[in-house]
Every structure is written in structure tokens, then in C-alpha cells.
Length: 316
Image (cartoon, rainbow, N blue to C red; front, side, top):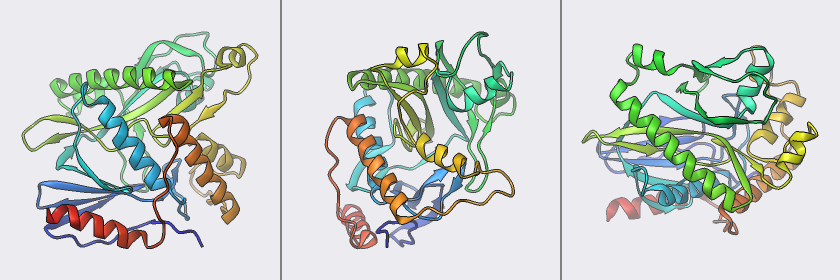
């Protein structure tokens, strides 16, 4: 049986509410702190898979919190502490209801739209004559509305975001600026590790004193796509598939099993052996992206461990 955490039902001191997203659960403590639990749930095509992936929550949480430390000189973030491998604790924020997606290359969703003959994505023009996985002349920002669990994120243009007052123009200018700065830093870090940061998404919130900060995950394989830099151009020239580090391998497996999250489709059964390979792949992703070995925390009694570590932090 997989030793994973796929949901939590904690009752911490001062707990006001719980928000359950696709893969994270966020506890509001005294309208002051947020305790974010990175579960082992796996989401693809905006659908949560029935089984958890061992160590996935630890991996995502550690990549995100370490990248926040490496970018806090550029963009402020919500983080205060990581008392447990699966947990981040930070300042209470009101999240913006958009995800800031930035693309350096025409891959994934952008490539699928391009193949359908579309040249405008989220109000941004994509040049003629591109092929899948080519670099854009400059990175493009293609926002998406933030969906509730079970719903699909939807493309939206900068103009619509401002016109519908989802985000004020003043705040949106800051979100764009922060997005470009984070992507530039992420690109530098990736290059130092023999990788290309292809595309990613960032989420932002506003603290009680009105400060815009980075929240949630950053540069993880769930929120980002990476290519191996070595051989990239050669593969492009030969029209070969790029070697990549991302959750795309799960999406491709699902597509090959006739699932893309569309109405009427059934999630294929993931065997324990396949789950194990996904777990191993996530560890490989961590080690390549972070350029360090992954240290596995015990997955015996995960819930007890998390509760103990969070309570120790809160009691301080």
C-alpha cells in the first residue's frame, strides 16, 4: 500500500478555516498565518488522480521553498518557516484570482493552440513560422483564471483581467513585473544546471498591509516545464521530441490511455508499479532541478509527523 498523504483533516489551535486545492491544503490560523500542507495528490488536466505519489508533497514543498529563498531579493514572498518537509507556513494573504503563466518557448498548451491555427493566446500574438518547442523572440505572459478544485483553469487576456476588475491595472503591472523578474532568475538558475526553463506559472497574493507577495509554488515540475539544454538545438533541427523534465510524462501517459480530462473520459488505473515509477521520476526531477540529493523524510505516520511539527511551531 502506498504510504502517502492524500488529504488532511487537522484541527490546529486558532484554526479559522481550511481551503483544499488540487494538491495543497491551506489552514488559516487566527486570520494571521497560513499553514500550507503539500499533499501527495497528483493533478493532471485539472483532474486529481485517485492515488497519491510517495514523496511528491515533500519534493514540491522543498523545491518551492528553496526557490523562494533564492528569489526573495527580487520579489517578496509569503514564507515564514518550513517546520516539516511537507509544510510551509507564511503570512495570511488574499490570493489574486489569476495565475501568471509565462512562456519562453512554444510548448504544451501554446503549441496545441498553434497547431489548431490560432496565433493569439490570451491576447498575445504568436509569430508565424514557428514550430513546436521553438523559443519565442521574448517570453510571453499568458494568464489563466484560477479554477476551484474540479474545474478547469481558463485562458484570459491582460485586457479582460483589468476590464473585469479581476485585478486592478495598478496591481497587474506589478504582477507582470514580478513574473518577468522571477522567470529571468529561474532561467539563469536552470541554465547553471544544464536545463532550459521553458514555461512556468506564478501565483501572487496581497498581505493584510497591502503588500503583493509571491505565494504557493515556484519552479516545481508541477508548475514548470524544463528541457535539457544539451542537444536542444540538434533535436529542434531534426524535428525530434525534446528531452524534458516536468509533469508532462504523466500527461503523455494519460493521453496514451485515452484521458485528457474531457467530459465522459475515465481516469485510467495507475498500478502500484506505475505509481512507483512516477515517484522515482519526481525524485530525479528534484535532484536535477535543485542540483542536490533528495533526502527522504519518513513516510511512516506522515499525518502524525506533520501535526507534531506544526504544533511545535505554533506553540513557539
